[in-house]
Amino acid sequence: MQDLRDFIKGIEELGELKTVHHAHWDLEIGAITEISASEPNPPALLFDEIKDYPSGFRLLSNMFQTQSRTALALGLPPDLKGVALVSSVREMLKSIQPTPPALQKRGAIQENVFFDKEASVLRFPVPKLHRQDGGRYLGTADAVITSDPELSWVNLGTARVQVIEERKVALYVSPGKQTRLIAQKYWDQGKACPVAVVCGIEPVLFAVSGLGLPWGESEYDFAGHIQKAPVQVVKGQVTGLPIPATAEIVIEGEIPPPEVESVMEGPFGEWTGYYASGTRPSPVIRVQAVYHRNDPILTALPDFKTYPLSSYLFLVFCAAGVWNEIEKVGITDVTGVWLAEWGMRFFIVIAVKQRYGGHARQAAHVALGAREGGYLGRFVVLVDDDIDPANLPDVLWAMSTRCDPQTSIEIVTQCWSSPIDPRIPPAQRKAGDFTNSRAIIDACRPFAWRNHFPKVHSIDSDFRDQIMQKWKHIFNQR
Ligand SMILES: Cc1cc2nc3c(=O)[nH]c(=O)nc-3n(C[C@H](O)[C@H](O)[C@H](O)COP(=O)(O)O)c2cc1C
Image (cartoon, rainbow, N blue to C red; front, side, top):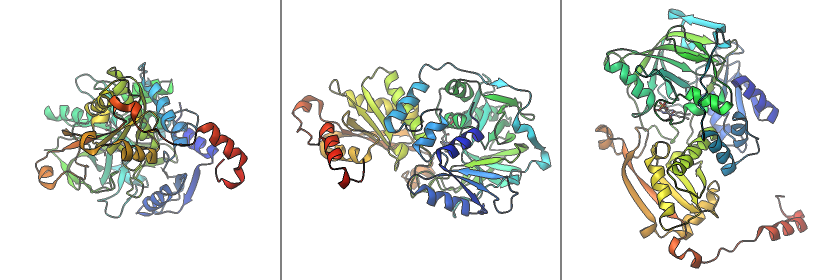
């Protein structure tokens, strides 16, 4: 099992870690993270000696900003990139052998435990990330743990957590997410929902917390399968929920029914580059206990407008999930799936080796109808198998040259979107209607006359290698 500290050690060995001293939690950490992320090959940033906090109370950001660190986090060779990286993740997601967590008597997370009045979330250097944010955000790279009261399976979902008071935080969970559906079951019985939030989390568990797994399947079992060893957990003293034994920071508490207590959450600079969901009444967590390791490390994944990608980890899992969803229903010959870094969920690219008329369109419709590919999207672009879906210039070339807008673009309406979609019109938003439309852009050669489509002219790879070798003194790349 690789905990966060093992992962940081690995990043250091890759030469991709930078330590930053004396930054302020109020905007400086956010700004340094954003500027660094927009540079080529951004390092992971480990902030220490943060203003107002003791040395050793650290914050880690930009940890999944490169494909090499993402591969490392998953125990894969760090040179895997693009569709090859997605393919490896896809294999991990197939033939799942659920591996339940192993309950331990003690874990590093219990090194420091505080209850009731002592359980302040401001023990940690919680950052205010963007100037117009409504406050400090404890959870941006977290996992919210709840348990279904009827079936008693344990769910983990990533959701943002804003500090309201030292012992009260607000939770933003989109409609339809399992965390919300589980909490609703407690609320329907007039009860508060027991909850734990992990804020410094091991990489594999974080990866699966951001995934839409089928109802009833625990992310703990899934993470155990991926890392080929059960996640070690200890029992939360207040809620009885299993909490990761080597996590850095955990808070425990309860979410009362919204009619009993709600607060205004937000605004928060979202991954779309906008403040779309604004402020609205949201559920609160009344904090009853705080746990942390010695010298704890809070993880943060702020979103940026300048470079919307905050995590390749999420990108490759989402792409692999979409690919598997298509394959599961019997559609063959998908050769790659990717999410454009500048559009993420809003811009999914699917490459298909077309075998029959309608084949590529079928793949797009399945993606839109499934859980992972169907949520909060905008464009699904279909390309032939000679296009690398992870190479955006190549994708734009295919769209520009193989599309006939009148016949190649298909619109699907009333799809599952979210309050964070910036394009939901004000009146629709006010009415609580968070659906949107999608465009399937078919940038494949039309199947019926694909063999008559003009030939591509491009230097063949053997000749390219020969020329590169002979004339290497005039080329930058080797
Ligand atoms: C970095 C990151 C931040 C996220 N923030 C939120 C959020 O604030 N609210 C939300 O509903 N989903 C958020 N998501 C998406 C959910 O984590 C994802 O849809 C997950 O499947 C939800 O799990 P659940 O259905 O078990 O609740 C985020 C995902 C990632 C990777």
